[in-house]
Image 1: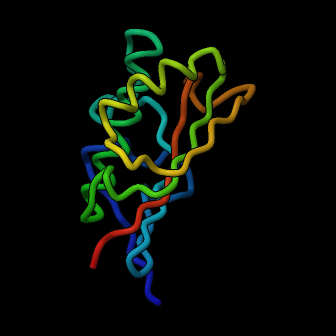
Image 2: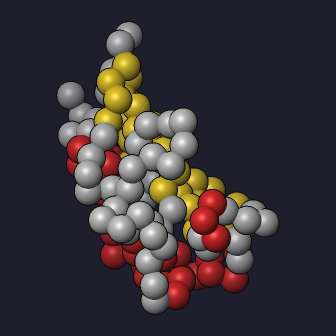
Amino acid sequence: MAKQIIQTELAPQAIGTYSQAVKVGDTVYLSGQIPLDPATMTLVEGGMDAQIRRVFDNLKAVAEAAGGGLRDVVKLNIFLTDLGHFALVNEIMAGYFAPPYPARAAIGVAALPRGAGVEMDGVMVLDR
């Protein structure tokens, strides 16, 4: 099956050797997003709440560029430098997703690129 590279100006440009997303058939693999403002390519200000919201907004932009939306995400991976923010992720996630929620993992990590406090990636399946 051919793969299609997904790219949008509404999400941060890749800061390494990867694509924002790759679509193969009806499956889209969303690369990790950190809380970069796509216009300035700098971390958003405003604390962890703003970082989490920016990551969801970035994922949403890439999902939409692939022809879907967050409703099509079947697996979400969340990386946090402080697992104490787990409840905040849940609270904010409820504003971006509706039941049934995607499968999910939340992983504590020592550090993330550019000093971010959160990163998320996911897998999306599009309806044909």
